Amino acid sequence: MSLAERILAGEIRAAARLMRDIDDNLPSSRDELRRLFTHTGKAFLIGITGPPGAGKSTLVDQVTATFRRRGKRVGIVAVDPTSPFTGGAILGDRIRMNRHADDDGVFIRSLATRGHLGGLSRSTADVANVMDAMGMDIVIIETVGVGQDEVDIVRLAHTTLVVMVPGMGDDIQAIKAGILEIGDLFVVNKADRDGADRTVRELSFMLEMNHYEESSWRPPVMKTEAQRGTGVEELVEMVESHHDWLKQSGEIDSLLRDKQGTLFQLLLKERLFAEVWGPLQKSGAYDELLDAILARTSDPYSAVDELLAKRLQS
Amino acid sequence: MSLAERILAGEIRAAARLMRDIDDNLPSSRDELRRLFTHTGKAFLIGITGPPGAGKSTLVDQVTATFRRRGKRVGIVAVDPTSPFTGGAILGDRIRMNRHADDDGVFIRSLATRGHLGGLSRSTADVANVMDAMGMDIVIIETVGVGQDEVDIVRLAHTTLVVMVPGMGDDIQAIKAGILEIGDLFVVNKADRDGADRTVRELSFMLEMNHYEESSWRPPVMKTEAQRGTGVEELVEMVESHHDWLKQSGEIDSLLRDKQGTLFQLLLKERLFAEVWGPLQKSGAYDELLDAILARTSDPYSAVDELLAKRLQS
Image 1 (cartoon, rainbow over the protein chains, first blue to last red):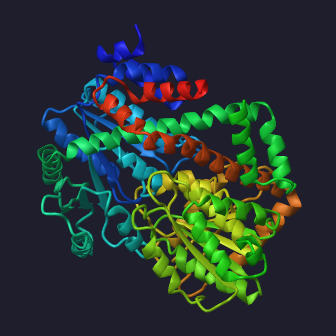
Image 2 (image 1 turned 180 degrees about the vertical axis):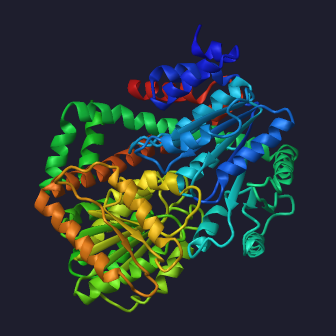
Image 3 (image 1 turned 135 degrees about the vertical axis):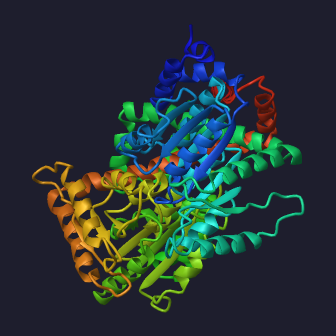
């Protein structure tokens, strides 16, 4: 039996195995994903992002507990773009210590950047697809940070939560500007801290400047204390309201289209590069090319042009 | 006269113009960069990264002032991956208010992500090359965050400073793990705050676990209060020590090779994708393909395979 068939039959170990293969970027994993694809599209994907120190992991833990009480199965993809070299072991360990470890209705997978060639957003999408096909009702994608990788990653979700904490310092304006447009819901966590109400007011004010259409979704700003569970129930209800709004407004159609488009583009980018990069390195041509660039007899711009021209000829 | 010639003749306006063209990804900008390339390789590139709120901009300001007192010309590339939608206007404004605005020996350029196709690391490298060719002695690349984009960006520098602040919360372990290997120097800024010494000790402890070779550079952990300028002089001296070490140890050769390799790969990735993406969108094939994926009669994995196979045939 293929891994895909075993996964569809409910075998957890097969899912874990396929996720490892995805991480290692084995070509066989693409065949399995292809087989699983018709079984995707049922899960509701929630993206959770925000700067380091905002308490996202604790919040994910609480949100998961709330969905579990409602009888939903929850998959969690914990993406850690901050650990390009350690392979995410630290985040992985932290996650594994959480209280859902013995719950069959929760499946957790950590992902981390593996070096320079990227592919993290793509493997996140792949893993979310496996969880979807496994029958998880909810898939939570948690990611640290607010850079381009994170934007790609949250584009895979139906609903995106941006988590902030009171009083984050000078760069807060810059962060806010970037995240205002990716958040469907804003959460000021650690709301017992000084300045929580001010952060809520500032966020609300910046959101109001966005000039929403009559029919658009207006992102609410909510307060939580994830550590104690305060505000989590309300947060989950608001997430479900957003989901309802997506369906009623018909926005879900363009969102699903965007989601598939994102995955397609990520896959395409990765494959196109791999196709050229492999032979270039193996043949020694890459080394020669760098020698010429370092000697200033060539330059990176011409080297790429020449390579593309040569490919067209052959 | 070409823009490149005007830049080499010292015309600032021509440099600003070319940087705009780079931002807009005009093909003509590649020709200009090619012309400038033989004039690059003289500037010393310093990368400065770290989480939001660490006070990087103030530190860059102070480091710049210190280099100016030593008679060096300084270029600053302020990269803002947190503003994918606003085009970095906010960071740009903040930067423009700084005290070097009237100083001819300082040239500042802000860059921000423009949507999903990336290219930010590549345009950062391009802009740094222009500043290098303009005759800037020092080029500082400042970036917010610690994700994959930032790793790509700091790979462009000779010396990388990672800026932290005391007591940053739960995710600090995860951040540290990711940045330990990219920093040549660690700076605990806002060192007048509680917990500064503890953060210095923790960082030093984690660095010691790295088991450096006898001959390797051991990243120091330094304290600054950028707001008041405390510790900045010492920091700049340490940056220069690292530069000296790079040259004396011969490490600079592999570093320069990596730097050029990074730029080449970024360019290649971008061009390969653009080559396929443009026609795919224009012809309407992309829309058809998404229709099929959404109807589950195709899937993203097969769609990419088919596209690549078709390209091979034609």
